[in-house]
Structures are given as structure tokens and as C-alpha cells.
Image (cartoon, rainbow, N blue to C red; front, side):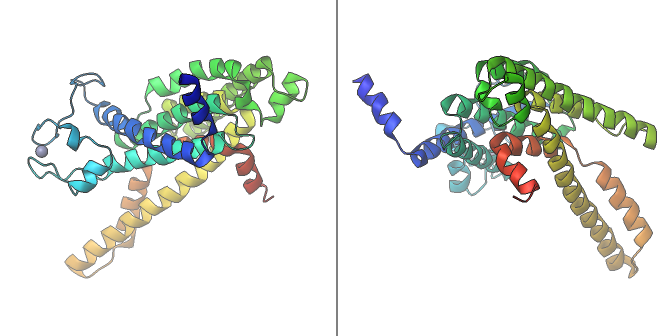
Amino acid sequence: MIDDLLATFQDLPRGAWTAIAAVFGLFVGSFLNVVIYRYPLEDQTVNSPKRSACPSCGHQLGWKENVPLFSWLVQRGKCTACGWSIPWRYPLVEASNAALWGLCAWISLGPDGGGAGLLLVRCVVMSALLVTTFVDFDCFEIPDSVSIGGMIVGPIVSFALPALHADSPLALDLSGGEVVTRTGALLNSLAGMAAGFGVLWLIGRVGARAFGKEAMGFGDVKLMGAGGAFVGPGAILAALMLGSVLASVWGAGVMLRFYALVQSRARSRSGRKPAAKAWRVARLAGQYVPFGPFLAAGIGIVLLDWNHVLGLLLRQ
Ligand SMILES: [Zn+2]
């Protein structure tokens, strides 16, 4: 009976597993919202209080109001008790986690994808990166449980699942053969951690010297150490490049928005457009763009499909 059931599951096509992973991801995404929302609150933890409540009126949510994504859609983004607008980032986190888990399943269960073990690792890392992204946007802080936790777990997982480093030329070299060994994967992981941590720490030091103030948070340094432990040294440097490009594009967008905002306000008030003042405000706004979310995005991209990313970078 159980064997039959297992056999049926094993025969499921890749698309079906992708859908199953996405549904699981949706529910886990709902839990990630709790983690993100409660992170800066001192009187609440992930376990307590047990039930979620409306932050506006304290109304405790029944199961019908707790179905990820769908409750928000059915209630049209409002609390059923007080009509408080539930921020769109709640369904965004749920949908993002569902999409990421679906993507992890599609890639992991495909040819050369690594299989079920790597699927689990990829899903957990993606969710950790998603939490990091939102917590850093909110609090300018990266949770130690993600960064330090990743630096501890990364080498262990690499030893247990050497396939995690199957794409790394260095890991193959260190393994001395055609297949990445446990030792090769572990050494590649440690080298990746040293590279990620070291390079960002160095950039931070040089930046601090050049600009006379802290340019890089230590949380970013630890995050890169953790990322390197999962993807190895070559890939973590690619992640850093990707993250820097994404952060620059986002930062430029934020600055343009503030520039336009200051100018349009000044024009409606006095008919003039003070370029110098608008530029000052834009530069200030640009300084409040966190780096962590973009590093997390870079790490996520190389973790999912490092070969593909490398091909894109080299235009192959
Ligand atoms: Zn309410």
C-alpha cells in the first residue's frame, strides 16, 4: 500500500512536483510573513502569540482569514473586522515564496538538477534569503540566524550533499576527478565562505577609508560568507557582481523618484524647480538603500542556476 503510494509519487511528472512545491511554498510563505513582521518586535516571537491577529484592531484571525494569498484576494486586502488595509507585501511574500519553491523544484528535478536533497536545500536557502530581503528593507539589519546560521550550516550541507558543488570547477579540481567528492565540496564551501566574507570585508574597509564613514554593514559581510559556503568562491563573486548591479539600478530609481518628487512639490508651491535641493534630497534617499536584499538576490540567482548565469555573463 505505502509502496504503491510512493511509486505513484515517484512517477509524477516534473510539472506536478513543481505545482506541489509551489503550494507548500505558499503556506511556508505565510509563516515567513510572521517571521518578518515579528522580527523587530520585542514582545513577540515566532511561537508567541500562537494565533495571528490584525495589527490594527487585534481581531484574531480564523482559518478562513489565514489561507495564504487567497484570503487577501477574497477580503480584497482588508481586515474583516475593522477594514484595515492589509499591506500588499503579505501576499507578495507568499506568492514570491511559492514561485521560488516552484522554480527550485523545476530546476532540481530536471536534468542535472541534483534531485530531492538539493531541492530541499535550495528551498530552505531561498526562504532564508526572502526573509533577509524584507527584514533588511524594514530594519537595515540582516538576521544573524540567517548569516551566522548559514556559515555554520553551509559547510555541513556541502559535506552531506557534494552535488551542491557539482558545477564548480574548483570543487572538481579539489576532488581530483570527474565527480565532486565530500572533501572537495567541503573545501569549496570553506573557500567560498572565505571569499564572500573576505572580499566584502575588504571593500568595506577600503570604502570606510575613502569616504570616512562605514560604507558596508557587517551584516552584509556575514551574509556573503554564508552565501559563499553554499555556492563556492567563483559563484559568490558572481553573486556580488549581480547584487551590485541590481543595487545600483534600484538606487538610481529611488534617487530619480525623490528628485522628481521634490521638484514637482516645489513647482506646485512656488512655480520654481530647485535642482540643487532636489539633488541633495535624492542623494540622501540613495544612502538609505540597503545592500542586503540585492546580495540576497545575487546569491539566489547563482544558487539556482550558476551555469546559466555564467553563460549569460559570458554571452554564450
Ligand atoms: Zn482589524
